[in-house]
Length: 326
Image (cartoon, rainbow, N blue to C red; front, top):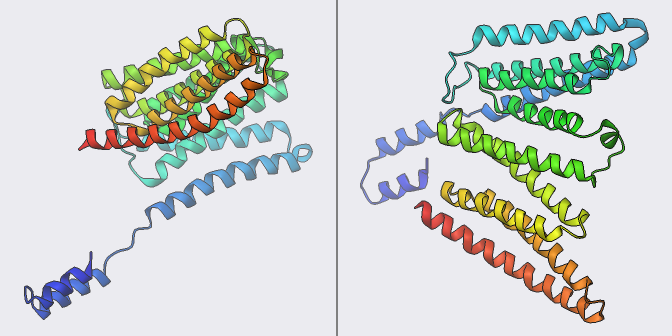
């Protein structure tokens, strides 16, 4: 509330002293919201509890015993899920608000401890043997069901991360992930498949109104993953980089078109930036084939001019989106 406006109204004799005093009193007694402060403290509490549990286990692994540790983690996990099941609102494909502020954090803690429980079980007892895909698929299934059942975007992000881990292990050899060979052709194709799948889920969520508010999270992960995979393909493939460039252009066109339809400058921004990276790789590859010092000068001129062009383009697109939103 702008008190100066009311003071000007009083000076113009449009309100009297009693009304001005009432406005000032209401402003002075206005409640101060602690919403974000409390949410921040709750998030920190979950992180500190998870981190403290890990440190406690690490420091006392010899004295506590593995079975006791698993029991503690299991009890925390079961308690959190039990609380969430009792407090949750009825399921709906539309957005469902949390019953209280503590609910989201209890669910997040329950999911974190569940992943910890499965990981600890596999690491210590090799419960799933060498079936690493199963060890990641079980948390993936539980997290996905929890995200939809309890309507939680944070858990959905965890589920997508587990999906990436599961696909990386099941689709490509485990040794590739261990060696961090991210230039592997198989990992590139895995990224394309995963990114395409997430974009498809985003499209279905938005069009079919199946947890429509999940669409942004799916699209965000999917766009980054598929763009990075395409850029990696352009760098790894010496003979087929042009095909990857064309494929990325097609994907970028559809994401760009969808972003304009949704009036989302964020997706317009990342599409333009990834497109600029891909175009720059293509230009550099073409200039390298010249084997001439002139190619270096042309490259420098390109980067100077293109950087300015991208900035101008983004400013123009931002104005168009704002104008279209009015």
